[in-house]
Amino acid sequence: MKFSNTLIFWYLQNNRELPWRKTKNPYFIWLSEIMLQQTRVAQGTAYYLKFSESFPTVFDLAKADESTVLKMWQGLGYYSRARNLHYSAKQIAEEFNGEFPSTYKEIIKLKGIGDYTASAIASICFNEPTAVVDGNVYRVLSRYFGINTAINSSAGIKEFKALAQTLIDESKPGTHNQAIMDFGALHCKPQNPLCETCPFADSCVALEKKLTKELPVKEKKIKVRNRYFNFLVVKTNTNKTILSERKGKGIWQGLYQFPLIESDTNIDKNELVSSKEFINLFPNETTLSLFNKKEIIHKLSHQHLYTQFWIVETATSSEAKIKWNTINKYPVPVLIANFLETFQSEK
Image (cartoon, rainbow, N blue to C red; front, side, top):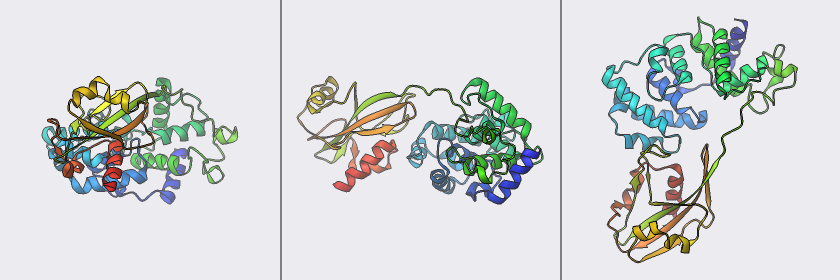
């Protein structure tokens, strides 16, 4: 209990003013927690405000079409979060009449919600004493207790969850959870933690043993895969282009893209026009030019995309059905959104 009291005392003096902290409405807490996964608070806040204004209730989000949701999510990345959010909103609206589930066991059944998000919603909105464990919590606990179990191992996940659960203040679980997350984000930071002014300085194992840089421990990352993308940006005489929705379960599912030819390495103009895919797409005469003179490297968690945008001018194409003056209404990956911003500003 002493740990939690010290933590909450620190929090009451140092907590961040965040828009979702002004409510206990589970819908808004859910929105914020999903958006802040893999996203910095500064970036996530702008999206949260936009979403909560456009979709003030779960019913509003449920009745929106997926393309609209993805367009509003554009730039946040990890688009499966948006698709799962939309799917669960429809489930809550249709099956639960808009009533958000009120227990951890029910909340975690919703698509796209894991232990951390379910614990956050259950504790903040419904006062259920379920401890959150995210990157900030792993860091605080591993340093304070001197734990060197890898935080991304199955053993580590179980160990830290069990430990976090023993520390939670059952009378103020929501405040405790928000306190430990803020403490990790603002004080016990990944780099340069503020050890000199830390309220736990007299009992932190990492500080005593000079292990703050070594903890927490992570197992080796998955090998990054390099991929080579050639996007074909079509311009017809009638000012139309080809843009199609990505299907399947891969990256950017549900987003739109220009025709894509993926190669094993970076290729030049001659290699591109002689490829079978290019010939099949453009049997008629075309003018081809490379837009970005320097290869664009777009880094995702497990893959790096080495990208070239080729401008393909052709008189006509049966596949070109999208008018250039409507292209900005389609949800696209940030890689393509950045290209469009530059391309359209230069026209």
